[in-house]
Length: 113
Image 1 (cartoon, helix red, strand yellow):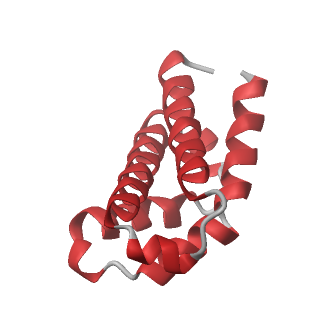
Image 2: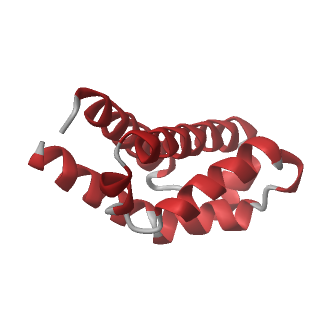
């Protein structure tokens, strides 16, 4: 794996781990009530999407091995460019239903080096 690709995967891993740590033990209502938490989570999702977009340019086959990589990049674009229409339920749903699989896949890719 090229060093750039490893850096992007590491950036994804770090950001995903942060989201997990930030939200651990919290409920959706707590997420909604905490504007700093929502901002932090959205920032980390932005990093994930940007790193994956850059990975897709550098090593498209590797990026394609990340499930739903195009959807993740599109999610980043919505968070960054469509910030006024961000649906907190969708963000929370991604955390609950998809973040774990992303973390697992990225860890596997990094372990393969």
